[in-house]
Length: 289
Image (cartoon, rainbow, N blue to C red):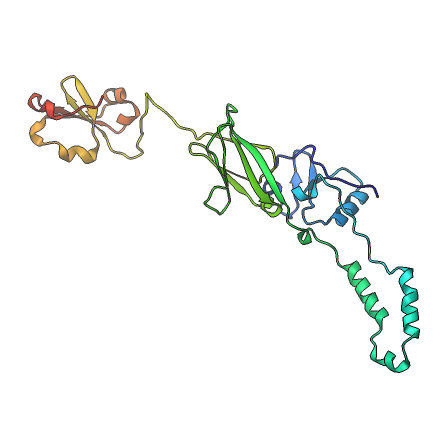
């Protein structure tokens, strides 16, 4: 059989966990094919699989299984050149010594049988280091994102952080590629994904609503407290009302009508309490610019 190499020409972007069916199989709706898990196959088993396949298949592979010649392990055989020395040696042994000697042929046949029954596994191969490179961008505008942390799921420490061009690089081993990684940047929704070399990860920005500048909309039912001193006014938190001396207050007005509260927008939806400060004490109020 000619040398065979597995080369990734059209990587699939589907996540392995997303295409798992209730029966345990993995079916890709994009290419309308069942995906075969080949990550546990040895070189000999991979050669046998592709030799007998009848149609194009989609498979899941380790990085160490690709871009190299697959090695075919030769079957264990007893050469005829060994039979003659064994036969001659048997003739040279006396009957008394033969009773003490264990039959070599039986032991050899047992070893030959075990060699045929034992199938090599990829786990018996030496662990190969691999380098995974990728880029993280904004899904909306494609802009490269810096300072994005890449960490393995279940761990706190970041294994890589993107540079100013959104690039990251990880030095892993084959087993690590079967783990999920978390891609996280404040202001963006984190992503859980498996890593492939040269992949582009797109983060989605968290949605925020801004009304008339930087504002915070409370979800409680408290009214809006507003302090007014002449032509100046500002809001005050309910927890700060105790700092106002009753002697400073000239009047308190409660606005409930929709027409009156509409001018204050969503912040005044639960009503507005307008506190007028006496002219003599207006200098005690510091209004923020």
